[in-house]
View 1 (cartoon, rainbow, N blue to C red):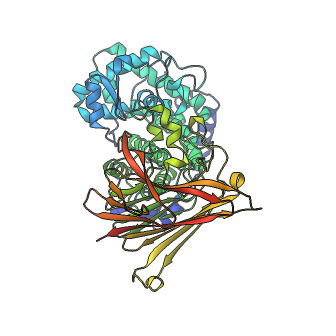
View 2 (cartoon, rainbow, N blue to C red):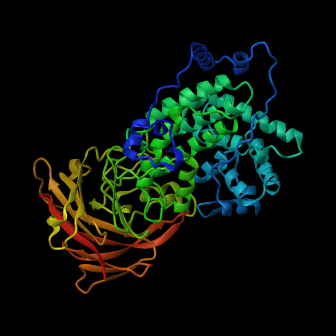
View 3 (cartoon, rainbow, N blue to C red):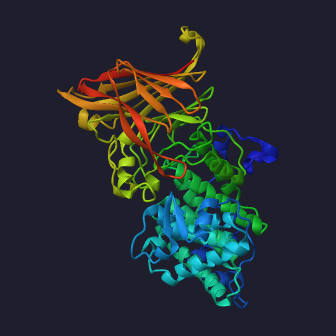
Length: 594
């Protein structure tokens, strides 16, 4: 392995191969001398940082030691809305004057995340020069501090004091300090600095009580940033670096995907480490090699779930995040690499053929302790051509509470909201409240192979064949779902077959099934006369034909979460009927015409 790879981001524009990137992960704490290990241990036990850093010196007043250059620009439209007097979150307008900063009346989860995590500071910075944006930021911060005068005795007491929101809030305060510390009001400035210091001390004590492991990543990243930017912070920095590297080792899988299997979580982890790296640069320090290595490891799995236009696939609660947002994030991370195509632990298969991209969920859903917006999407797929989604999933459950009604959150996580087979209108894995999942799929078998052209003599083209099966319906119905997808190398034809295979002793009777194909936005669809085919006219002028070899097709209404997490009405093709408990198979074809 070349030295440049071992240091993280590719040097001189080198693109790191994902297979090589997998060898970069090292989750052991930074190598320290005996003195630094003792300092870290003492700080963890509660000895104040000032005592450890300079025991014979008077405590320094709270101040920031450096100004951080924000690496990730926010949403200019949302920042403009703030200047006009309201938050703009997934299309929802919330007047600042009506926001309950104290948490007595609960906001919806996506609104809580933006408001209490202070993600809106980046949006405001993107919308106006500092002299115009700072007064707005200071007014909102003053309202928030008035509603939250002191941290609670325990973590999670109100939405403002979950570890995730608190970690993001502190990190944003530090990165965007010029917006909240530039005013002439000395009392407000002192209060803000006091809040920064007090929040850092609170996180020191409570970070281990995070809602989940990704929340702890946010908390540890903020602790480390505070150790870099506040006086006498060396003990806190050593403490934070060790905690951050340890929890990253627990939340990141072997192939670089988070155990939550969430692309939104992947984006959050990359953004946290990217902002933290900016704090290191501001203080002219190098981050531990382990953090750079993990950042390199996180990028290829995220790229695996992007379509031809760079936008994000709709998996595990995600919406179709814009390609330019993903590109900006990756550029800021400093990592240049290729997408993972066969990620067994991350659980997604990616096939690129000509202008066509296929994504398949080929793993069990995340375990309940990792899931935030867990979806019962096993064996669902998305297909796009030249950046236009042809078959998609509804997506957007993590944005429910914006313009997407909160009552739809569980429905958007259901198997029926994904392009796959559903038995008896039940979920392949139980969907619980709070974004968690119950029993269901426990085992998925996957086989991927390349078909040579001679094996496809009729067409003269090779193909990629994916075959996967899951046991989510085995306990209830005695049936295994197996899906076979064959995508031609020129990207013009996708052949599919869904099989239901008996497991154990055969059961009598029949059960209802539905194979759903949620269509991408702005596709005009019409049924053939025999109702076993459908024509799909894409916005780019191309025309695709869908054929069922297993019964009639119906067209039903659907919904899709767009690039802002807003609801867009759509349609879906459905093949449905009754199948024997002895099993059955259902073939279908999607082909580009002309």
